[in-house]
Length: 289
Image (cartoon, rainbow, N blue to C red; front, side, top):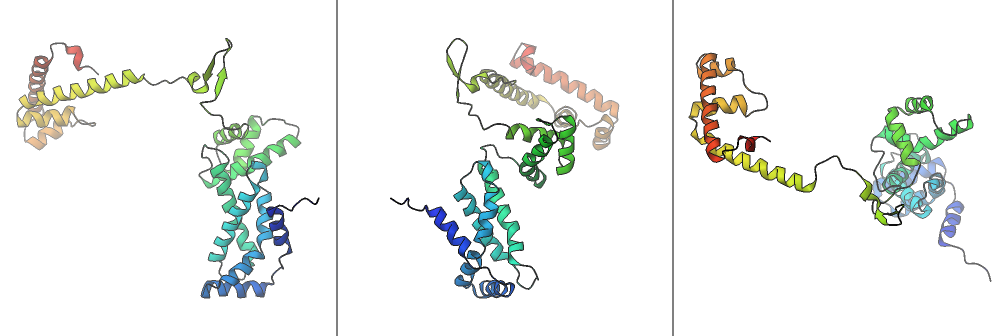
């Protein structure tokens, strides 16, 4: 019994059988689509260039994505090219469409090749799609793995930093790994991969405790500040409670007093604050973060 032909094979066969267009035919169809939104003109123009989409999609098969999806994304780029093409420019449609088709397929690869998004800048995209070729070139020259000089050469050729090259090389060297994937320990017990990740941050209970203490100290300070006069409060706020504390000279000029007088008022205000805080809590260590 004859094996049925797959839909994709039928599609490819039809695309390859589509007639080529002359430059004049391309121009006419493009004008009809742009000016009159003639759907038949668009269909004929894109159908004649689906072989270009298939050829470009085939170049990205080694990323492990569905060929059907690559062709579909390439077709999206082809439609985008048809929408933006300017017939009055003396350029063949295939030349113009190639960029849009490739860009659409590359965006699809970057979105779906890994769950970790990479290649956000144009230089990083170039690195992502050219690193394999550059690595293969290095292998031809007798190196199985890039060395320090090779990384520098690749970085210079693509226009990125060496650190970017090393990071991208490590990403392309292996597939994504789930943090929930089980790991069998030497004693036979099983644990998730994330259980072996070490965090330098504080434990959750320490974080909560720190936030509670911070809020409590803020309340104590707000209550203690009410014992200060308006001028004392202004000096303490601008000298002690801002990221860039005001100088004695600037505060003296603003208040119309000498810098020595500002210093005296500040010292008296801090003593009043200390006394008020100790009334709230007799342990001075409670106010230290």
